Length: 407
Image (cartoon, rainbow, N blue to C red; front, side, top):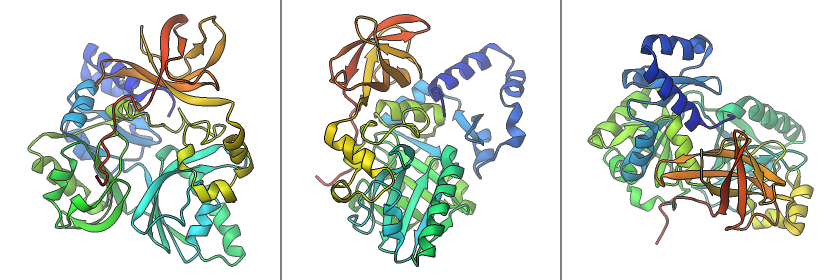
């Protein structure tokens, strides 16, 4: 989604505060009827969720608290997000691993059962079709989640290649998990709260690992992962059990874990230095340019065998011409498409995401600059509404990550 959700949330907050709430709600959310709704829609509205259109869905941008407070609460206590608009699917069959390896940069074969990784679906030119968290459940079962805004093109892409693969005798099939909902529980209270709802020992489940287990009486797919930089989980739950699970999580936390909307989700992922597809990654940006070289498996670098491998392997050898970097800056927060200049006023790149960091209390942004100008500490000028403000290339993540890993 183009433009910062944080900015959208701030403008909605300002305007709703300035106008009669009912009139404002009618004006902003007129297209509600055309939008898809998750099974938690009524639950969001009952809890004061401000619903906005996002990737064809009606989703909460925030609740009764501000985006600033909500972001800080996630890092201090915890957040519960409804991310059921995202698309979960399973690939099955004895050839599902070699099939998927034709489409992504990860060493899927090298994953141990019950573990996963972030990966990128690439096109023939090495550009990113989408990013996805994939999990090898077993050698003949892969579970993955793709972005809501990319669902149609991703599924068409996978289906087209699956037909060709099967026509040559490959054994692979798929199931799209439209019968399930997806909740993300993030923050320092995520594990202690979720532990109240399952008999499984969550202290033995580390970052990137996956288990199928009963949570609050429902059989769930649980992945220790997230999009905030905090410890946490993504929980795929049968849709008929989703509202009960959300209620149980909020109850067990004693009010400390709060329902959190897309506005805070955007500022949290930006603080964690994570890409938003459609802003920081697009069809013309390669994983190497996006700073995701670490996600290209060692064996894949040697063998290739995925779409666009020639382009990507060449970039690994010679270096890319542009690179994704972080920035801090003064003045108003940079926005998507803000021009980046060197100190002499020459164009060197463009901001792709930016906002005010609720946790650091300063402007943060990410964008692409010419290689050679990507080193931390490099000074730059960032244009906001036609005026240049001082910026400096800054290492990401801006806020240290707290993933739960073996000590």
